[in-house]
Length: 114
Image (tube, rainbow, N blue to C red):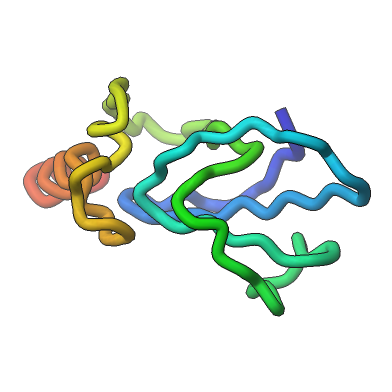
């Protein structure tokens, strides 16, 4: 668990998490396949709106394993549990076109974002 952040989460949107370590962490946890690119940069850039001199880490996700969201309304959710196919393997990379994204978009179109 890390620092809480107060902001509104919009349905069907992507979010970025910035992590800074002042010293070497050694090997970190990672998830080999993600359907979006991950980036890194030198120095403490967690407060920056954009990173300077960033470099692409490829399709792995490091350190972060999730985002907890506290509901303030009677919103409903569906959780997709699965393997690499659920994560987007076989879909067009970096396009929000894995089956959970498509399902979310279809449900939002039919029922709204309530």
